[in-house]
Image: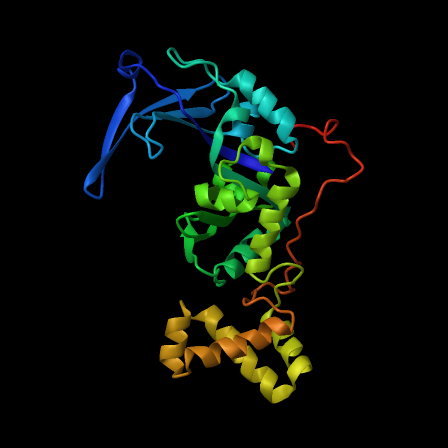
Length: 319
């Protein structure tokens, strides 16, 4: 499912046209990054951002175009795009016309940003999932709060978020939705598609769902229920015996309760590699490296794929 898109085109724009745009100049090392920006609101409240770089890394003028695809089509991003081909065709008709810029075809733009999303309908368990997810670590990413609605795992190229969509949007239609959202930048999109200059023609629904499933696997959540303190202790004791199971549970509870693994190793005196070995035993027992304070274990987060028997041509644009 797709939300925000960013595409670029190699298009020169005259200075006369740019006079009405905003101009920004930022230091970048010993050089300056200069660009012009124009934000245009369309009738349904969506905002389309045009950013023009007179001097790009390709040594040619570059126009960036960024917007939320479902917001452009229906006025919000509560409901996500489920048919890429139809949605992009409609978006081409909805894009605002700007003086001095030729009519743009989104299919021809090179992707530099792609936000893919999935809505987990978990009802009143949303805050329990967020609390549990805040204790997880993602390899080569930093775990950070996402405003007051959720958690994010972030580096320069990829950010994965889990958040309460109802709190974030204020829309009653989003009540009970835990949104999983991954924002991919240039290098990450190239890795996902295997292409040097990927376009929307290279993005399929299967590819977006693969990316979301990869996030769950990286967090050891794929197919795994988040246990309570009682059920996780029982699982570890059943798997390894009472003494070893209690030891491994202690390592799990420590990383959940303490702010970081560094704090755990410093307070306990355990070597980081020894802690990692114990946590590996937890993973091997089928548990994610977190716990919930809900009375019952939290069901696994599952990415459901559309029925393969339903033709994409017949599928609705927005789901």
